[in-house]
Length: 555
Image (tube, rainbow, N blue to C red; front, side, top):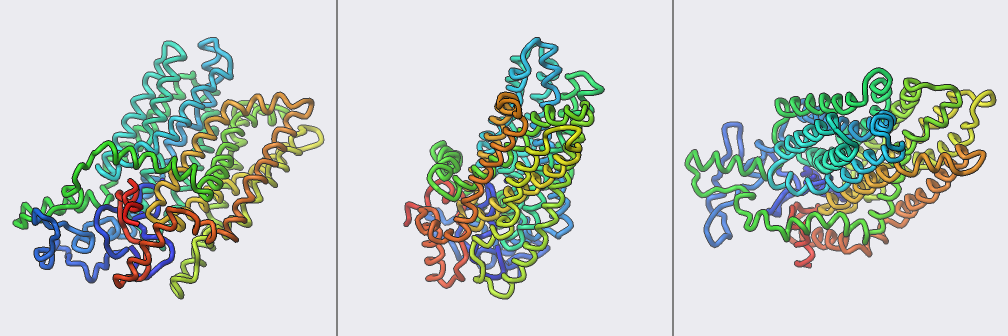
C-alpha cells in the first residue's frame, strides 16, 4: 500500500509507499548500523544524554541510536517471511471483493431481486474499500501496523457473519459496506514494505505485494465458480470468513511490529526501566498526537493530490481503468463464453489465463529492477524518477491490443475457438499488473515524503472504478446492438488507448511537470536544505508532519 547507504535521486524509503514516512526527526535517510550507537546487547545512549533542544529536557531516541531494533535490520529471511504473510492477507482482502459475483445469482433467486440489484453488494464493497484503506492509514502510523491489521482483519471477518445469516438482502448490502470500509488494504501492507526496505531495495518487495493485490482479484472468480456450483449461497460468505480467519491467525503468530516510531517508543520504555530515565520515543513526545485537525489533514491529502496533481490524476485514472477491466470481465465473461456453452466451472476457469498473465508480468519486472539497481550502484544520480516508467512504455499498449483482440474474437463458434479470447486476456492481465506496479513505483520516486498520499490516490481510483464497473458491465455488453459483445470491448479498447497516452507524456516531460508541482517544489527545497547542512541530497524523513501539510508552512 517508506534509508540508503548511498545517495539516491528518488526518495527516502521511509517515504516510499503508502503510509511511508517515519516521524518527527530529520535524519540521514538510512541510519548506518556501523555508526549507530546500538548493539545486540541493547541501545547505548552515550551521546544522547548531551542532546536535547526541548524545554522539558527530555531526550528523543532516534533511528541511528536504536537501528538494530528496527525493521530495516531484520534478516532477509525474516523480512520475506513477514512479506509472505502480508501477501496472503492482501490476497484475502481482494478475494473478498472478487468472489462475490458468484453469489449474485443465488441472492437473486433467494431474495427475489434482479441480478442488477444483487450486484450492488459488489459495488458497495469496492467503493467502501476505496475509502476504507485511506482511513486506516494514519492509525497504522500512530498505533503500529500489527494492531491495525489485526483490527481490520477482525472486523472484516465479523461482517461476514451477518451476510451469511442475512434474513433479507438489505442486511447483505450493509454487511458488505462495513466489510469494505474495514479493509485496510494496500495503505498498510505497502507501508510495511517501507518499514523494512530502503528506496533502492524496495522494488522487489513492491512487485511481490502488487502481485498479491491483482492476484486476489483473479483467484476469486476461480474459487467462486466451485462455490456457486456445489454449495449454497451462504457458503460464499462462510468461505470468505474461513479464509480471513486463517490469515488473521497467521498474522497474529508470525508477524511482528515493523513501524519504526512504535519500535522506538518500545525501546525507549525499555531503556527507562533499565535506568535511562530521560529517554523517550518519538511517539511519546508528540503533542496532540490524536488531534482531529491533523488526522483530517492526513486523510484529505490523497484526495487533494488526486485533484491537483496531473501525474497522480492521470496515472491513477489509468490504473483505476485497468483494474476496473478485470471486474468488468467478471460480468462480461458470462455472455462471451456462454457462446461456447461454458458452464459455471468453465467460466471460473476462464480466469486462469489472467492469473498466468499476472505471473508473467511479475517475472518480467526482474530485468528492469536489476538493471536499475546496477545503474544506481555506479552512479546514484544517473536516473530520474521517470526511469521507473521505462518498462511500462512497452507493456501498457498491451491493454488496448488485448481489448481489441478480445473484442473481435468474441464472435463465438464456429469461426473462432474459445482459446482465442483467453489468449488476449493474458495480454490485458500483463498490462494491468505493469500499470499498477509502475505507477506506484513512479509516484514513490517522484513524490518522496508525499508518496503515501500519491499512491493513496492510485488505490482510491482502482477500487472506486472497479466498484462502479460492477454496475455498468452487464448493460454495456448487452445494449450495443447486434454485435454488442464485440463493440463493448472495442469501446473499452479505445478508452484504454486514450488513458495510456499520459504515460509517454510523463516519461518525456516529467521533470517539467514536476517543477510546477507544489509538492515536488517542497521536496526540492528539502533536498537543497539538506545539501546546505552537509547532506547528500537525499530526501529527508520528515514523517507525518509532511503528510499533514506542515512541510509547506516552512517553505
